[in-house]
Length: 126
Picture 1: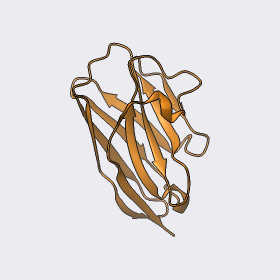
Picture 2: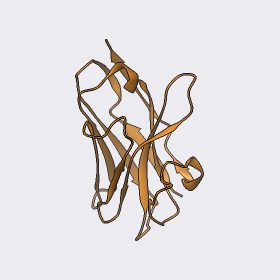
Picture 3: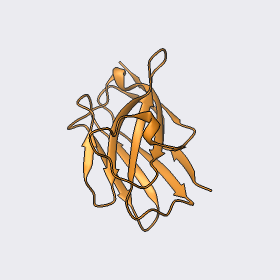
């Protein structure tokens, strides 16, 4: 059974930093796409960043240059380092894993990810 569990959320001021972690268990794919999504109140869930097993990464334009996605394959942990945070980054952040393919141009599509964590809240105050 695949399980994902996020941690590391919290409250920071504008310009601050946070690092989110996602512990993954029961997921054994040689090829994969793992991603971070976020959902702000009243808005749809959106893709933030994604990473493949060969360290290929993808980012949403809104976080490019501020956020970094990495993974520790030995420990099965996915990370999202968030720097220069803005109030518009406030959302619940979710990690997700696909069925064992690759990210591709459609990495932001929710339907590509059958496995999700429960989410962690990030609040950025002005």
